[in-house]
Length: 203
Ligand SMILES: Cc1cc2nc3c(=O)[nH]c(=O)nc-3n(C[C@H](O)[C@H](O)[C@H](O)COP(=O)(O)O)c2cc1C
Image 1: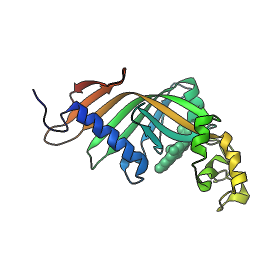
Image 2: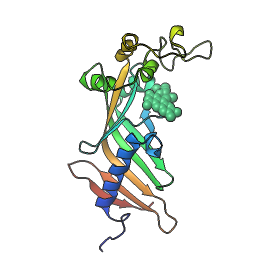
Image 3: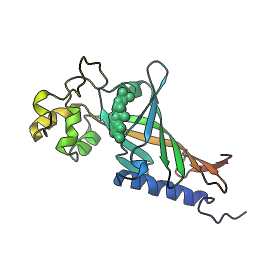
Image 4: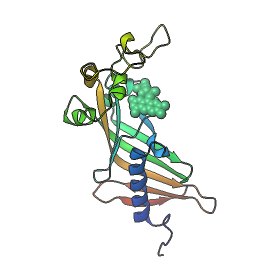
């Protein structure tokens, strides 16, 4: 049977996914800008949190976000690099569940290239004296007192580089779900070779 609708043509769905992930990086208002990222923690449990999508490479099929090397997720990803993103856009009516393998880039060329593009204000969160997610007596953000409500200068901001981490996540599988009252559609895209393998699924 020839498929005519763009939601029934596997190649078009793949192109549409890539287009929306690319938009999600650039457009801060796009719902794909802030996916939920999950990984396995040291106790064998699951941790999930919202991250900002910083890059999508449609050729290598890699999704990037930035984090602090001291954070629990970074520590846990070194032990177990299986990870998962969930994206949802209610206007597009599309959910993406993307299985990935994560690589941490800390104090290397990839981290340096991205760090050089960050604004001084964005660098501030890598300057906390206490480790991210560590316990504290008082409600605070861990930023040194002299930087509260201030932008660090360039020299001071550079202290954050050792904590700045680019997490690259190689896409292994995408579970695409299109919720439409006239007929839901679900497709699995498996990335074993250059081109994805497609498998329709009952939603
Ligand atoms: C809109 C939004 C964007 C966020 N972006 C990031 C991000 O890009 N990287 C990050 O490490 N944490 C980000 N966070 C914070 C995480 O959701 C999480 O609270 C924090 O990283 C601690 O997670 P962990 O204890 O599992 O390491 C963001 C939170 C929100 C609400």
